[in-house]
Length: 311
Image (cartoon, rainbow, N blue to C red; front, top):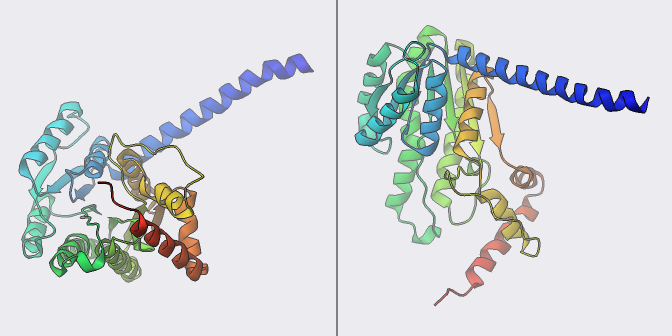
């Protein structure tokens, strides 16, 4: 009996590995078929996440319209995609200059986007601007700039492209948001406010356009880290605030988020929250135990203010 068990174990592991491989291949092919020939608009395509989303959707056979505010970087992305693509299975991306913080130009850009293919199947709102600092030292001008880039820009573009989806009774709008659409973190007042506003808008829009078979999805990671930044080892001797913030701040890699965006499109998910257990728990603590949550956050602020500056 013992010998049989020893012989069966490798076969069992081999069988499980085979099933996992088949599942991954089927998922990959399913992802490609979900976006094949679809017109996909990606804002801020020249960011780290934008580039990864462009790569994933381009490989899947989507007809890409890549938007960004720097033409040279858009051309570099175009060259990178074309250099590794199979021309028989992919479409040549279209490039469109777009700065979402300049609201006045968005309607004209939306018309240019529609002129590329005559329709939009998937709109990926990816653009975002960050600022960090005490509220009383952040100018109102900066607050407005953040709101334009993170809220008014995306909703203006969405409103301009939405009638095309409604008239065709098909489409999907994806908002890449942030955990700060769920709760605010000190010294990021403008950013958190813009993320709360964006999440509220798209949550309302989801219900409004459901009857037209238009899907609205939100993907909220913690933070999207750069390619070469990795979390440090945990230090349990640090305060609860430092431990919480470290777990919150390192976030997820752009490749992980891009793959999750593709799964969200494929499965037509309504809401995705990408975070490790600590930030996820914080969302529930904020909801059910707000006083405790506020006390922890306030302790973190006091601790930060009491630390003497070096030099």
